[in-house]
Amino acid sequence: MCRLEDQLRSPLLDRAGKGGAVTTEGAGLLPQARRLLRLNDEIVSTPGEGDLEGEIRVGAPEDVATMHLPGILGAFARSHPRIKLSVTCDCTANLLDQMSHGLLDLAPVKRDPFGAELGVRVWSEPLVWVALVQSILEAYPLPVIVAPAPDIYRKRALAALETAGLAFRAPSPRPASRPDGGAAGGSWGGGPSGRHGPRAT
Image: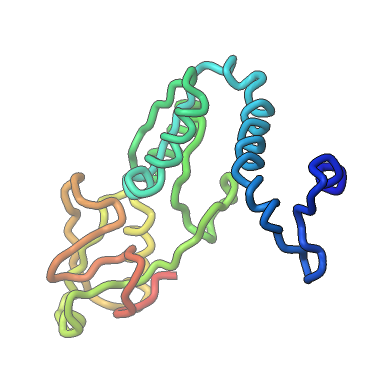
């Protein structure tokens, strides 16, 4: 920075205060400086990346695929245009089975925190109960709507009810239902909010 100031014969930073503030002359150079940094990043990242090609097979539960993957995969496709991305949406158990048979290269999946160590944990979320109205808890047996087997949330939700000794009825929804459960007028396990009923831990 001092060398640049010597060449320009003008101070670019005001060093009188803590941390140093940009002077008027320095502020005028910021747009050009940012362009140079972007150009530098492009030059550094270019070698070799354009030569990468092939296919990456990605698997994900439907909620992960629809909420998180579009932006991530879109950015990846733009930076690696010669790599083909294949995406499979399915429940965690089926995705893990495909991984074990070499049919997928990458799969962000949901799993039981007390299960076997699989891959690298990238996020965690609480499993709670949601009810449309408080009075639903007085129903006997408790009507519960959960995802179809072998969804991991279904397994944990029903296990929590059995452990609590609560009678329940849980018809399996059609495959088109949300993989993390969903209901109107009943209760369901696996949502991100709500505190009614036993905690499925």
